[in-house]
Amino acid sequence: MCIITNVEYKEIRIYRDVIKRVVDIVVSFLMILVFLPLILIAFILVFSENGWPVIFKQKRVTKKGRVFNLLKIRSMVKDAEQKLKSNKKLYKKYVENRFKLKIREDPRILKIGYSLRKYSIDELMQIFNVLKGDMSIVGPRAMLVNEIEHYKRMYPELSGEMEKLFSVKAGITGLAQVSQWQTLDIPQRIKLGAYYAENINIFLDIKILLKTILVVLKGIDIP
Figure (cartoon, helix red, strand yellow):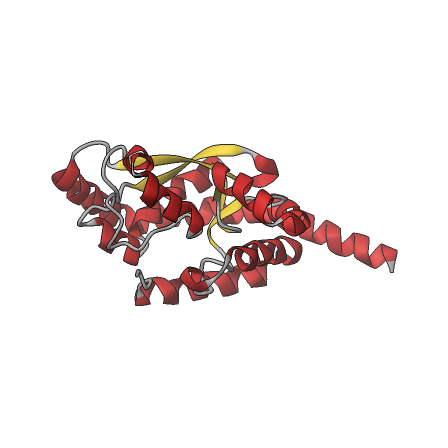
């Protein structure tokens, strides 16, 4: 039984560390070829509404707790985080509401930002994070540093799941991202990330990618 378990783990490790990286590089290059015109159009629209920069960088956490700069096409006003924190009442609501606000009450969102988010166009810059090796195409959601600290205080019983979640690279898409993200509570998101890390394989990745296509074509329900 122990030998079978070790063999299975070795296969998982080879896929996670070698094959998955090769697939990530190939798929990323193909995605750049396909989506570059859309990315450039988004750049022009953001610049027309709110000037430079058109790319937003945010500190996120990936495999083994490493912090990196996650890239997005900017869907918010400049200095959005400072603007939110300056409104203490709204910032408190943001933290209590799982680090999100309804788009209609969020003063940070650009006019074009709604469409960028609804069809996940703002996420396309993360292709370059994948090429760099910070992320994978498929994996758990990349969390904010302050999110992790907050969740550890709120859900100490999920420390084991958090550890599993950070045993793999964060992904552009993943189980949580395609599972009605807006309705999931924090423990569900963490458990889905941990489940993926424990069961990582090429067939699960393909299933998630196919579901991602359907979700993107339909458009994300943004309250």
